[in-house]
Image (tube, rainbow, N blue to C red; front, side, top):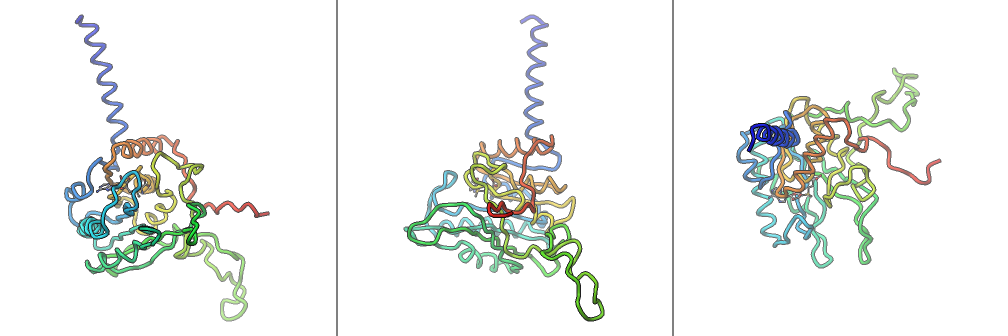
Length: 297
Ligand SMILES: C[S@@+](CC[C@H](N)C(=O)[O-])C[C@H]1O[C@@H](n2cnc3c(N)ncnc32)[C@H](O)[C@@H]1O
């Protein structure tokens, strides 16, 4: 090969290589296509401030193999044990789950998994009900339109920042009508506590965040947890990362993101989304945007 050609090939190869690295590297993100036990075992004790995730529900989705209830709980127990080891003393674990379904009978996974967290002495702070408008239309039971988030802490001394996640008060101009504060505004001008019932659209086909993943988190749901339960510069882990919604929520607010998934296709999409976030082109649904109401005037 002539030296000129060799140089030309050399340039092309290193360009391609550096593009690949650019797409799969970020100073604040540590993401891998790996089994979560392997990924977590390589991380130091008490290094994570928030562990937020949605595991498979053992219902035969494209990314999981249906197994017995016993084996499913055993696998969850192993992952939860690692999560507890990684959790900082002031940190939080948020396990977002719905129902396992077998022959038409439902098995709420928060009820089934709660004892696994209590086994490690964690304390439940909220059981957040996440409601949404879309899903299967059931014929022999009421259509499911909520899932839950179990929020546990490791100690009584835990981070909880209310101000960044306040939502507009219903009556912001309401005033005290008697007593020493008579005539003054009775509600916090920064807004109110969003409560433990969150109405956030799930990511279905026409959602701005939809990717090829069948069950992704809305980023706004994780943002609320990241802002309330961590501080800037702290670390957030999702051991069932999917297409990286938790990582995006963490990076958006200047936290470090850690995560893994078994599926290389999902991990590639996660990197692509991180790259778009950094370029300012990622479309996300604003965290507190009210749910569309066709009857609203
Ligand atoms: C419910 S999805 C999570 C989706 C994610 N919240 C998102 O927004 O994209 C569960 C994910 O766990 C992954 N998964 C299942 N078992 C795993 C394991 N042992 N280690 C790592 N990832 C796993 C699946 O590939 C799937 O993408």
